[in-house]
Length: 243
Image (tube, helix red, strand yellow):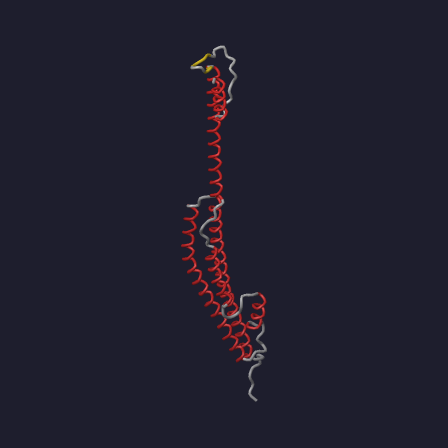
């Protein structure tokens, strides 16, 4: 019976992860037919307490690792809002206006050829009627250029209003970002919006300066035609003598 009780005690202790110290203490005594050793019992309690503390530490470590994984997932979460399509669309609207602009096209080769044709350097071989037609062409090109500039300015003004709404949304998304990736993506989109505004400002200035350049060229051509007409009016400078 004593052996059976001892075997059960050892089995229970093993199931709890306890190490049982052999009964060698002189303080051991019989209690209800069972050998009881206070020293061995105290050591087993100490072992159980240490085992429980180790398990608690492992639970805390696993909890911290789970929280760390959750935080990493937040850091990798994409921003739910994207202004890319809106920004690209507004730039495309201005680009389409420039491509469909009247008058001289906005590419280097065409500008060079058209300018040489519409704004010749010498009018000495032109008739008065041809110079009049050239003057009308210059006026038409300059008028078209200023019209294009006004269209671009109006389009830019419209996109500025749209950009204000996009900016407000991006700022809100940046402030409510749950991780580093969302904050970075919101920041990148804000930079893209700023770049888009700089690009459309450059486009607007290019169209404006083009109109001013054509106006200045028209004035120069007008001065040259006036010089040719004056020389023709004055002739060779010889006084008139009646025959």
